[in-house]
Amino acid sequence: MLKRRIIRVLVPYSRTLFFNDKGKECGVTADNFRQFEIYLNKKYYKKPVSIPFTVAFIPTPRDQLIHHLQQGLGDIAAGNLTATEARLKQVDFVAPKEQGSVSEIVINRTKDPAITNVEQLSGKTIHVRKSSSYFESLQNLNNRLKLEGKSPVLLNIVSDDLEDEDLMEMLNAGVISDIIVDDWKAKMWAQILPGIRVNEQAAMSSGGYIGCAFRKNSPLLAAELNDFYYNYERNLASMPYRLKKYYKKVKELQDPTNSGNTNRYNEIIQLFEKYGDKYDFDPLMLAAMGFQESKLDQSKRSPVGAVGVMQLMPTTGAEMKVGDINITEANIHAGTKYMDQLMTTYFQDAHFDLFNRSLFAFASYNAGPNKIASLRKLAAERGLNPDIWLNNVEIVTSEKVGLETTTYVRNVMKYYYSYKLMLERSKEKSKALTGSVAEKSN
Image 1 (spheres, one colour):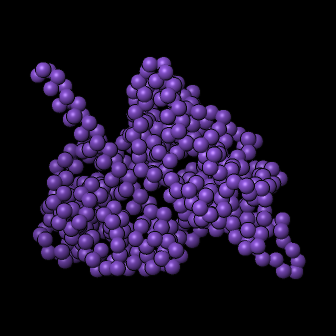
Image 2 (cartoon, one colour; image 1 turned 135 degrees about the horizontal axis):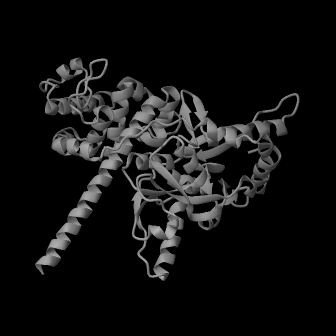
Image 3 (tube, rainbow, N blue to C red; image 1 turned 90 degrees about the horizontal axis):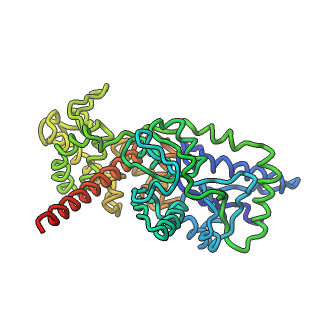
């Protein structure tokens, strides 16, 4: 690294840790490593000529951070990583104890009873990413509960596409009920999410330390990171400022599965299924987009004249030639047909799977297909996958367009996962009722 003067930092896309807003890299992790870049350049500057150090951020899915680090695809993995026993077997960490320890605490909804100890989670469902340290802690808790003869915590594994702040927004909206989050992040987001409760007494684990990971047997890099913290960063005392800086970087989510919204969903899901099948879109994705646009309310009209569930402009609706978009079915048909036309017209060279086809359609719907098509080419030039939205074309879009489009797509994605959870709960309830009826008949 001293020769090439480039430090590659693997980081997950996150509105707390790392995001790009119209070319400006933002987030707690981004700010921290820009300071590391300044520190290195001050330390190694030589007259009359000195090639500066550059920190290059490489957006990486959270579940691939350690693996990519081991493969040599980056020099450092950052992103609120706890130095767990399992991770320390794979990589080394700089996680200064002087920063203070971190506790993994239970977060639930304010309308539910407070949780005062983790034993109260016995028999409850916790939504958790399998790649997180929380999953490891929950497994340890379940082993302890088993020895005590108690019911285990039921672990509902969620997509690694969902960051802690996404899950807290879903909790705030009432979509899910209980999660585990690091205490500092929970306190940060609780200030702007009034529906969540931080149960500080219910600590899944405590005394953990957050830091950055790097490959084993890298003593020089370890020395630089330690020197940066102890002799530079700690003296600046800038971390509290950085945390406060991003408190307001959130767009509120609503619950698409509450009773009123669920009724509207149940009334029109068959239309999403009908036209999703016709135009090769996941019906739940279409429903999620409809909720983002209008809360599935056909009577909604925007200030600029967009109509109904899919918020189509009358001229666009007329061009689709499927009927009157003031009628719900024609509106959904026209909106789905329009997105299919965007895909078949502007993305003929793409090899999207069903999930990404939907995400690119939503991005095009929001920002325009020409813009997204050009950003795919730019992503490919940078070595990113032009057929994957998350952590690939999404990164270039946030840089060139800004957060509006990436936030729009991620909100739709969260509504999609909300509908999936709703259907899973419905199936479990039906299964339980069927079993109960069978027992009574016997």
